[in-house]
Length: 426
Image (cartoon, rainbow, N blue to C red; front, side, top):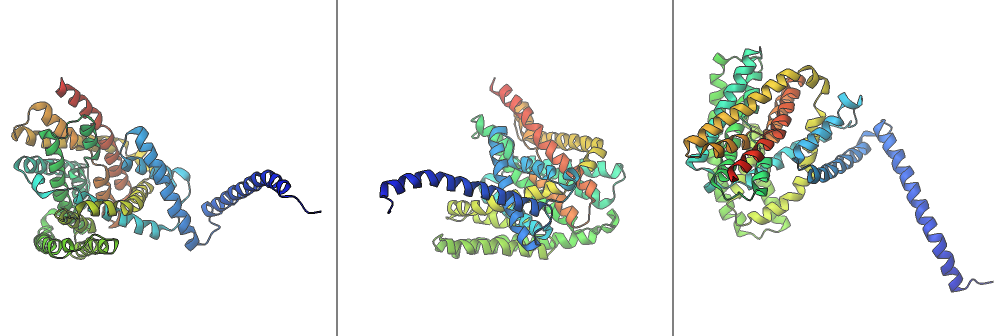
């Protein structure tokens, strides 16, 4: 006997939720099974790579949600997530395809510095006040880090690396605090932003020198390698900026910023990164210069919009990978050196940048705000430390010390900044 349409519809309404529930339950079981096999090594490595990347991106999304509620920089949260997932915490390696993670992390560091370059502007950066604050903000921390490492028995290359890490500046958190206070148009805010960019340029050049020092080199033997890298740096910066400006003006700006033509900008990015790496600088120096050149393009807004998805994919993986390198046992074992180096890092920025701000005509409170605003190290110090570890110039424990310093100097100064800004308003 044929089933009527109404009877069929009633049956379908009853069966449909059951089928959906069954498929959902089966999918969850399948997912749990795959996760178990992936984590405990029952999947072939080339298939496991997809799990690792998907897992990393999921963690990055959750960290970004945490940023909204904690109001802490995503770099720090992602670093902490990486530390939690490290072998020293879990007791086993959750990510086995290290080459793939390393490649994505390298791309993340390149896009990160490219973004920093895109957000910089020549005219508002290179003022007298910014130059004074930035110069002292590099020289004093470098001298402090180098002196501490040398006095505590560190070799010459580690002393140079610690000095280079302490020159770093990451003002993302500081700028966010000033923006929330509605003071972005104030002179001290502009000095923090401009001096931070010059700091980055000087700090990256210091890093480039350090990366070219053999591990057994002493101060007396360093003149020739430093002279060579200095000459290459001058040629690259001078010639690269002239050629890049010509390229942007006569090629890129005469095209519409379509997806296809955006690839031309990416070619410039990777070409400069490649040249920098080949001549002995770091690839991130070339990425920063490429971004800085493109700020002169009429397509700057479109470029920032098109770079954002790439940054969203690769940069979180970079920060998580940095956390994976941290050994919690080293942090516990070297707690006192970490605290001392963090104090040196904060004080040297306050002294260097604060004195520079006073010399530029700022009052004491504004100079203190600039000093604390320039104190966070965050991602730039992490980049310095990761490059040192990759090149075997520093040990795993020395990397952990610098990474912990970057974390502490990023968390503490913003609280003092808030207090100083409130005091200034009164």
